[in-house]
Length: 210
Image 1 (cartoon, one colour):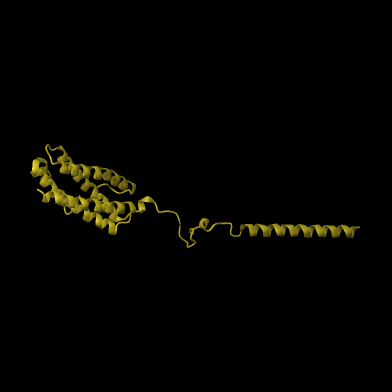
Image 2: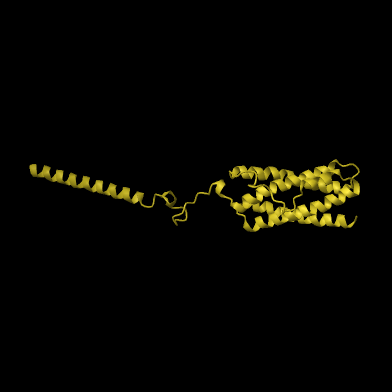
């Protein structure tokens, strides 16, 4: 009788051990491969040890982007100012008025967009040391002469100044296209080249007809 009970106890003990072992093995098997690679420290979805998280917005630009935007904001601002001067003049050629309206309508919204980019990048909105004059920008005396001019003289002066102004902008934009990093800034630079090269040709045609 005692031997029978001992046999039962041994059987139960072995069974319990077997079940515990089976459960342990099942737990290990269930954990195998259950942790995704991307959840492991230093491992991205590609499993190459690099993080797959996107770079912060402040890192998504380089010095060329910053210089381009800081330079283009005052450049656009002056073009809008020159266009406003022409729109205030009486008896101006309708083609000149239309051109000034188009320039203002295109560049004023871009000033707001570029200013917002610099704030997003945590960059100053003004270029250190001021804006250079080697990019088609007019001096104060040039603007005073344009503001005072009237009629055909004003039209010719506006076209001559704005051609030089646009040519400077195109040079700046082409530099950004080749050296910039931020995709939106590069896209803007390419749009400036396309639009302003077409306007340069339009202004040269208008100037030749006078």
